[in-house]
Image (cartoon, rainbow, N blue to C red):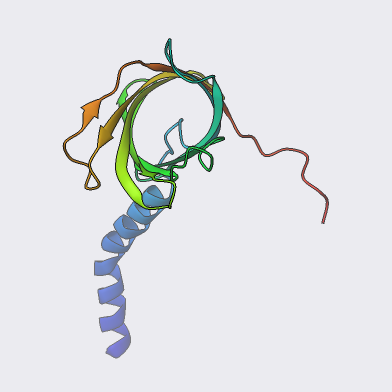
Length: 163
């Protein structure tokens, strides 16, 4: 009797188990966005701005954007922290904030950058970026003049040492 009850329960639960397995497999196989990964950027500020500079940026799953520039310790500013999203087709946008510090190391404001990106191939992108000065809470932002251009190339794993 007991075996028949277990057998009936398993038969009844089978469709539910199949659905759970399919959902679980589907969730783990969700396609990653083409922009996800880490990139090397060359940013060229608009006329009257500083010289072009290099930056590193990462687009993580869930919309997390992180970045840092070659002169961040000289300027001095923190790393960039923000969010990204697909806006259409092969186009993406991000908004990121980073602290600006006085010579004694105290934060004096937040800088906000809004960026647009377009993938031109799997491993290349172009973009535009603006910059705003905000209070320490990310409010009362004033757009600064100029727009920077961005050229990016994806970081690719290569030449791995043999273990």
